[in-house]
Length: 302
Ligand SMILES: Cc1ncc(COP(=O)(O)O)c(C=O)c1O
Image (cartoon, rainbow, N blue to C red):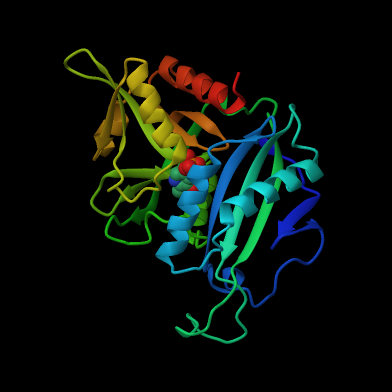
């Protein structure tokens, strides 16, 4: 999938041309990465799992004690609707990637944290990009991934929050690019599979008792609790796959017959090469393609 250039941005309740100046240089999101965000998909004018994304945004914000307005869900629903309409993406043929960013706000002083009695107003921004299939490089063909040198720490209270401090993830993407790969996967400090730079990881593996397992790192493995991940675990149980959430090793990853990533906008993305080695036969596997089609049908309600 690829994105096109947006014409508008929704900033604190107003639709502004995308090329305008939008936020202060003193905004703490810009200065310190002191903010949180969500990315979601809106296909055919329907926003997928907005309630789940809003709840996760609130949870991430609570982790950093960033105050968000009580009427946030209504504000976001209205803002997304207005923005999609302005971008021409709100109709039955529209398909958009929507990003919601909320920072602690603008603070004119220096330092890491305003005093306990200084109440800042959060900066809230919504952006939307058209999602179109990129010819010849659709995720259905599969991607290659490498292992990042960055390790994730399950004991870090920030590991499960979707904050705008993304330097680790940018670094991992650079590692992938330098290796000629598309993405990177993280392991934890204690050697267990964690997640990819902007997606959760799933393995398909046959088990000794003849059941095929859909395995993914548990929430204790320094991962984001993905909305697509939750959906996928529910879906698995209904199609005869045994869902497994737990600790997965490098060997588990190497022995998997299929590997795929999940995220709200990209959906289900087959991984066909890992650290230079083929996954399975190097083609997207049957369960991966089935999962991808099922999730796409859910999003587009087809
Ligand atoms: C680090 C990380 N993990 C997992 C995900 C997948 O989450 P979701 O399925 O809610 O999009 C994302 C999504 O952007 C992410 O950034």
